[in-house]
Image (cartoon, rainbow, N blue to C red; front, side):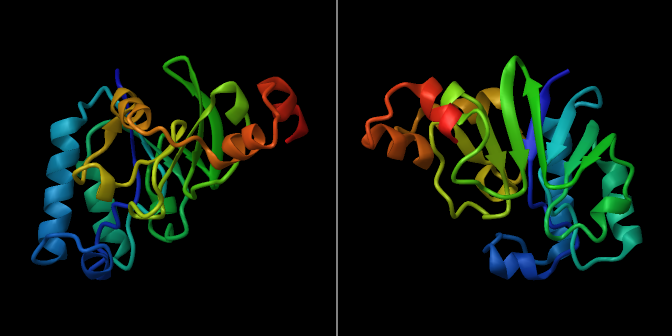
Length: 191
């Protein structure tokens, strides 16, 4: 089993094509291509954390049909557009935020990107969606939305490689270092 992450699929949402400049002729092509990309990436035994906004402005039947066609054990961190998403058969569902261990790493999962998060000074990672690629990555945070990952879920190893390619520290850590709080343990205790 491999663990993957994604967000902001917006299945059934015609407006997302214009809003996020997605290169599809219509929402039917969009949904089909995202389902195909998902299933080329995810095996039935894999786990996928969807960090919000699964489907939007579509019928409950459409959301259920799409959900049923996707491989893997699917887990949801609710986003701001979850009217249809909450009613699906997720293996687990969390309201907005979860701290967990994945592949031995402490990971903070949220629909929203945060400027500070628990355990950042001790190396915890923060994965999020919502911004459709607008917020740049840091060495410990990454937008896992489909707009950043070729319209497919991403593996933790891919996410770590992307975070490793940036020299940008999380804002809280950069500000603490600039203020002279070099002892990470003390800085984490203050926060």
